[in-house]
Image (cartoon, rainbow, N blue to C red; front, side, top):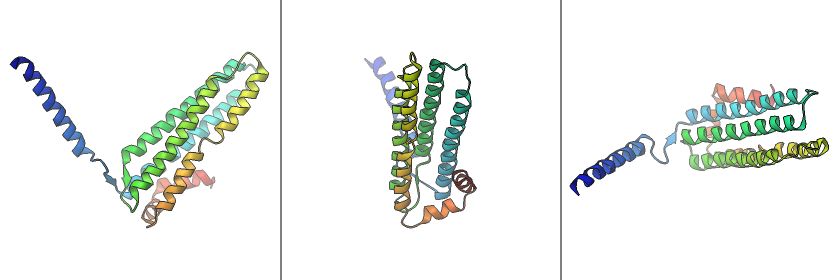
Length: 196
């Protein structure tokens, strides 16, 4: 019985040590400097949007191939949307890792951003499911399904935009907006979004 207890005690001790290290290394509710948070937010948002734009351009170019079959088109669409789902998930994970900005309502701002990203990820996952079900035997049915899917895809960023609007309204002190205004990554994002 003593032989059995020793490994159990070692396992429990190791588990407690690991839990303590994790708890102190990244305490729950840890706040992040607004500039660090803003740099992560602007960089990750820019990467996410640029990836979507680049993927759409590649898809459009590939779709012009006259030898493309409905099955080929479906594979291209599924790949594009699946990449979008993965990129959106990575965006959400990066924003979770950075934590909440150390500003008034920082936790609520973070929650709004994360909810927006999650909503966009859910929309893309639904589009992915639809894309995987596109019919390929009839070119007319494929074209009709792809047109419907295109309309769904056009709205994937709406939850993120809604979360962003809510986050902006929660920055009542203006501290986060001030921090974002000083960051080159945010200036790059603004230029990308406005086309300027």
